[in-house]
Length: 188
Image 1 (spheres, rainbow, N blue to C red):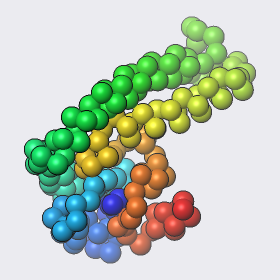
Image 2 (cartoon, rainbow, N blue to C red):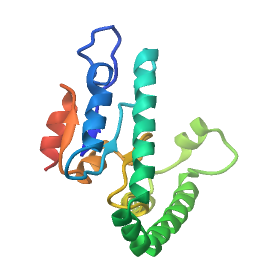
Image 3 (cartoon, rainbow, N blue to C red):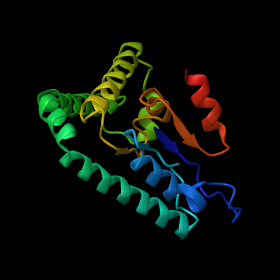
């Protein structure tokens, strides 16, 4: 289950985000669900930039998920699954390192010696490089999700994986009244 709350917004309207009034309860209920579910928590990137209270709730949710993940890892059912998939998860982590290194190489644009603005002016689009970057990003996304167990709770922050990638890894979503809901539905 993906929990993707929006941020607190520019004002103190409590209706902007579910984090303040319900976030911890949502996560607690998912953690203690009768049928175990994996929780993917992807807070809005602006969460906590304006409200110390929202930042604190976000931190507590991350802590709850970390603790729940540790407890789950100790359960025999999940420990056995972790042992069974250890080699594949390790290989996926190695793939991430390889892909990140190649993406860093490809990030060097234009000729060397100039600043970013100069390099962007004199650089020509390279369709082959762009195709390789797109392929590597897709490979990175696949390797990322394989680098940990399908049963493991996850907090996802930063630009990668993207929100749509989180949609594709989840069967259900809890969110706020925002475009995330229609995007989730549109993602299929």
